[in-house]
Structure formats: C-alpha cells, structure tokens
Image 1: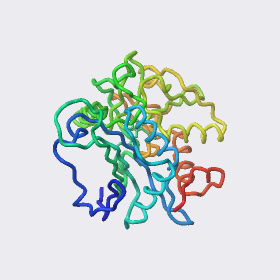
Image 2 (image 1 turned 90 degrees about the horizontal axis):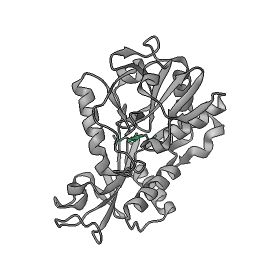
Image 3 (image 1 turned 120 degrees about the vertical axis):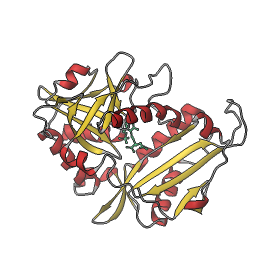
Image 4 (image 1 turned 45 degrees about the horizontal axis):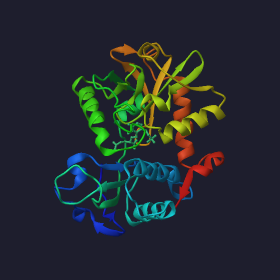
Length: 303
Ligand code: PPE
C-alpha cells in the first residue's frame, strides 16, 4: 500500500499525518464503525470509480443497521469520494469509514459523535501477484463466519472483521493465501474479504445472502456478467465437499477482483490450474471496470 496526501475528515481535507482520533474513540474500543472499499480504475476517458453509487448505498444501509445518524446525502457522499480521489495523485482504492468517535468509556453508543472519513490509497494487488496470476491456495478456517443471529453479517461493520483477521492470520500461519469460512450450518459462507463461486456440472454457484455473507458488489457484477455470457448462476447452499470437488473455484471482491483458487485444504481444484470459466470472467471483468465494454458503462462513475 502507498499512502496519499490528503484525507477527507468530516467535510474537510487534512494532511495524511493529521488524520487522527482519540484513543478512547468508541469505534477503536468497541468496533462501532462501518466502511467500504472501492476501486478506482484508469479508462481511456480518465479515472472512473467502479460502482460508486452501489458502494455508497451499502455504506448508508450499514449506517442504518448501526443506527448511525449520517448527516450526508447519497449524492454528497459520492461527490466527497470523487473529490478525495481528485485531490490525491496516485489512487486505486478508496476507503470511506463512518464510525463513533468521542472520548468516554462505556458501551452505550447513543449520543456518541459520528465521524466520517474518506481515505484514498494506492493498494495495488491485494492477495499478491503470484496468487492473482497462478491461483490462490485456501484453507477452511477454524473460525466461523459470524452469522445473522450474532452480528449483522450482511453489513460491513468494523467489529465483525475480527473474525476475518483471525481467519486470515490462520491461513497465513498454515501457509495458504486466504481462508474460507463456514457458516452456522457448516456450509460455505465466504473468504476473509471475498465472496466465493464454484463452477460445477456446467453451472456457477455462489452462497446465498442468507448464508451469513456480505452481499458483494463484485459478486453481483460477476453474476450479471456471467449471465450475459450465457452461464446459469445459482445462489445456493454450498457444502465443503461440493467446493472440494468443483471443476473451478474463484473469489470475488473489490480489492481481490477475480482471483482463481487452485488448492483448498491441500486438495487440488480441478487439475490444479486456474480454470477456463474463471479466467474468462476475470478477463471480462478487467475490461468492464476499465470502461472497455459500453454495455456496462452504467457501472462507471467517471471523474
Ligand atoms: N466479503 C467480505 C467479508 C468482504 O470484506 C468483502 C470486501 C467481500 C466479501 C466482497 O465484497 P465487494 O468488495 O463488495 O465485492 N472486502 C474488501 C477488503 C477488506 C479490507 O479492507 O481489506 C474489499 O474487497 O474492498
């Protein structure tokens, strides 16, 4: 990751090094924040923020879930994100974060001031170049994806990411690139920061939104693109065995984009090489985000 010059903080730009909060900020102690991760791409007509409107909608929905009183409209947030990208030199990823600030001890979040920051960075490859080019290895995490009875799994809430961090660390300790988490029923939920797809018996499958996943925007893009390319896409329960024995497995996420999975828990997926369908979708996605296919111009927020 490379840092940039300015961070948007509650309506003003401040220098990167001055974007600070108090150590007793509520979010720091109790995880009471929500965030987004959004990619910025170069196109032949300048920079574009991919599916900005959908990301802002999901951020606002997460605020509603957490009862955060966000004093900005959808348009104002889109404009602030766009202004942050323009303000900085080298940006490929933006992270807006709405969180509880304050300086007090105590769980009650009511009346704790809501802070809103927009940080833009140069992220580059999220899972590493090798995993992206040759395929990633996964392990099934011993940590379960928090399910809907215990936490709002469908909202991008900071505190919920403790499980993702534990799962990711476990994967690294076990020599893998990424972790896949199961849900309360023992079915596949998702990875620490990506949704999962399998290709089996000629169809694409991805876990249902009720299976304790974050409803990924990349997941949604791939479902539409795959449908347009003639694939049948089914949202279904996916068992661990179905995942092991799939012809292809791949992950989708804003940061990870489309990354092929070639090994899970020491079992090769298919022949252990990135699969054809996944590669076709990854290539199409790479074109779509860069404005090379006019059919998906609707997803580009040009700045
Ligand atoms: N599941 C989780 C748990 C998740 O964090 C992400 C995004 C996804 C699925 C995919 O959602 P979408 O980006 O809308 O397709 N993870 C972000 C990385 C988290 C991080 O800060 O690191 C991302 O891809 O931006």
